[in-house]
Length: 192
Image (cartoon, rainbow, N blue to C red; front, top):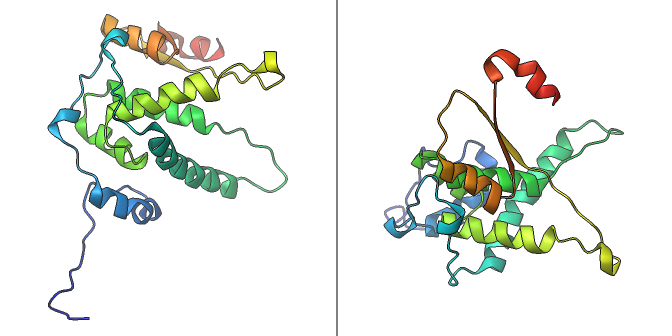
């Protein structure tokens, strides 16, 4: 190998915090570029979310599944033998998608895109829709499983919330949304 042609790649702040994740996704990230057309409004209403047809949802799901399998292996390996664990990769995906869809922080959105190997919020939304309509479908009438997931967002009641944000959580993500008193009734809220 010609030493003049070799290049050393240095880690950048956009790499994920876990080095094994960085290595796992490095090749994909090198090919991935965020364009200006992928900028999102921090809290669109449910009606404003339009899923483009150009997204290859199956491919996007495979990419996100790679992360899910990696995370599942980490969780299982950290649990003591002969113990029980409840872990929902679908719920983790839902939370990360909700964060990306509502965050005004570009750094956080970019981190989530990198983690889930996604190129845009549209792609994350398309995968979430597929999961919600196919994976979480009630198949009990045909002898299949009935899978239920409960996602919810609770925010401190003193913080201002745009109506569009509440609409997004309740109608797109099918998540419960409530403003509660964490400051003075945290224990009561936790027990509810």
